[in-house]
Each structure stands twice: as C-alpha cells, then as structure tokens.
Image 1 (cartoon, rainbow, N blue to C red):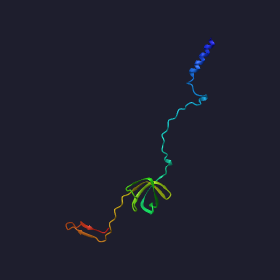
Image 2: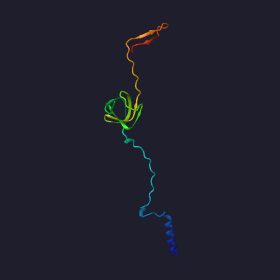
Image 3: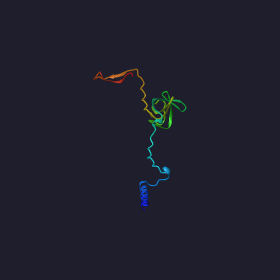
Image 4: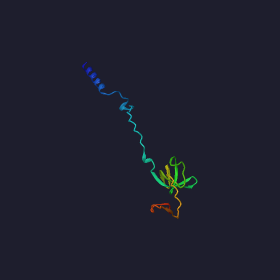
Length: 142
C-alpha cells in the first residue's frame, strides 16, 4: 500500500510538472507562433537614378524631341506643368532617369516664354523738358 501511494504521488507530480499535452515526439506538428508581419518598405536602391535637365525644346523628327543635346521620351504617366503640349523654342525642365543620350521624362515643366525683344532702333528721338533740361521724353537706341 505504501508502495502504491508512492507510485501514485510520483505520477501526479510528473503530470503536474509537465505542461499541456503537445502533439508528437519532439513537438512535431505543434503550431508555431507566427511572427508579426513587417510593413513592406520601399526599395529606393532599385529605382533608377533621377536626373534633372534644363534646355530648349526642339523637334528632332516625326514624334521625336530633343532638350538640349538629349533625346526626350515621355513616360506614360508623365506630368506636364505649364502647358499641355510640347512647343519648339520653349525652355523646359525635365525630371526623370537618364539612359545614355536619352532622358525619360517623369515630370516636365515648361517655363514661361520670354517676351519678344523689341526691334533695335538706331535713331534717338528725345524731346527735352523746357523746365528741367535733365529730363527728357522719347526713345533712344537699344
């Protein structure tokens, strides 16, 4: 009887000291705790290097444009600021990746056209004031 009580006490201690029942030998088939998902981060090192270029736009053939000495290609979702179409002779600033002699425009900003310069006049026609001889009115050579 004493021996039976000792065996029962040992079995009770083993049952209490071990944790809850786990599937399989060496915990095979046990559900593992999932690690919290990390937020996806942008990989900027995989994006092409951006370049900025400013120059005068000019047509280089049917459907081809040049800005300075670089060929210009518009990306499908290119954002154009300052106008809806390309115009020869206007100055533009282009942002996009540069590949060889071509720049792919992701953003294109057209600068305001410079006002035309007045024609140069050679004749000076100044009418001086009678009350103050240092003040005059008229035009002078450009």
